[in-house]
Image (cartoon, rainbow, N blue to C red; front, side):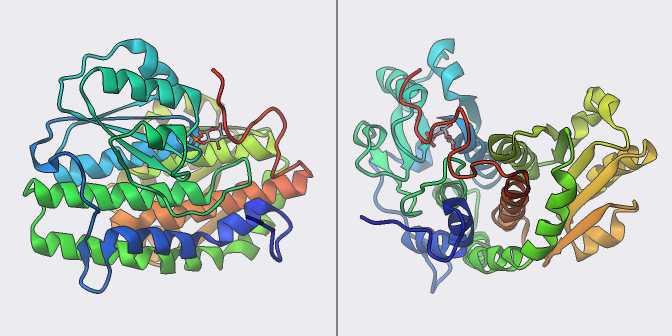
Length: 367
Ligand code: G6P
């Protein structure tokens, strides 16, 4: 069917703004929102008896999977290994039959992800895919499909598909935790209530757009940008860097904040922006000390945090963006919006072809 840009200049802008709505739809599909319970469609395997999960994906979908790993391990105490699909398909991982293999893909056609799926299927895994196109090859070859209800995504740089992938993976991880008894009913209600609040917090993040647009003018002059985060903010740092390089062509790298001292700190000077994604959580202080290391070397810090984080950061920043306080489980949803907006507005300042960046394809069906 027909998809247009609405009032937006680019599909990417429209898709960023649609997120509260489509993440809400996706959550409503997997959660009983009135009673704060998970309500998954019936799966053809027993989550309670799983011993192992392997996740495989490419690009932005890989980063969604990486956040999913943190959730599966925390909520369901299930060991998860995760690979970039082009590595997984060739590394011949030993897979004990009866495990769960999860493939995350917007298009459902990515060649490396499909090849990984076929490898896992040949090795006796239960195949679950998280796809945005339910008629895709990956969906058809899976034993179970958990669709993301993002609607058609046109911009080559993935935005709404990513946050909908997070919605599915979070729902699945909570369901796994309940099935395995690592989460109590009260835990489930608390986590589901948090997820139900995610679309509203994404809408709050969208309200920071004018400030982010102003910062984008400075960022567009940078040659290199470093993104830092810990915990689930680490995959977001990777995704933030990916978004920026995809559409603005500015070199960017995402790093686990704790790795700063093992290399990237050598790059810090007064010209390189360092974007720190640090909601005030149980590891905030660790990230704050990394920020202080950056500040001590004259680095330019751009901080995405909440009121408590802004207060406790203990450094002078070039810009601080303050989101409402929110449960740790949902920070990836709201903070994703900020990194997307930042990449988008930087690309607009640079005058690149935001929806069709050079050398990139929406769906990579060849190796
Ligand atoms: C391409 C797209 C990315 C996407 C990746 C994986 O590189 O440009 O936006 O994240 O493929 O695509 P998939 O359809 O499998 O999610």
